[in-house]
Image 1: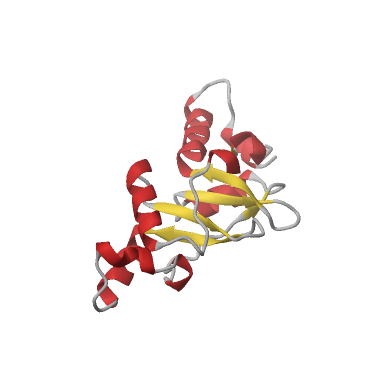
Image 2: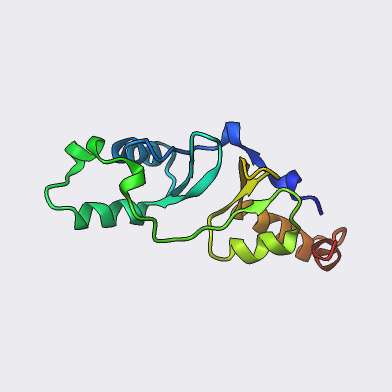
Length: 145
């Protein structure tokens, strides 16, 4: 199965850059109610996934840091504790499923390592659910494609 079918394109993805501020990330994550967002550099490459936990640990471990001065902290200064892996657009469902076990979404890159979007864990679970419980679908056959 072609994973591009599940792709949420970059234009529809909430992301930040390493030069965005901690405050920008906090506000954007609150607005969209996300617990994690991808970081994309100025060349369009995926550099990692920022989580609420990363932001909380930075706040906890930085003396004198509070919400009011989070606009002084760049995201590139924040350690990312999770190493969310990306897949290439020509990857198969097996690759997606193994990553989605531990990631809310799987970043997708092209042949030049440029970020092109994400595949949400919920979309993968829905696909698997339909394959398991829909008599017209065979999950085993689609995963092995």
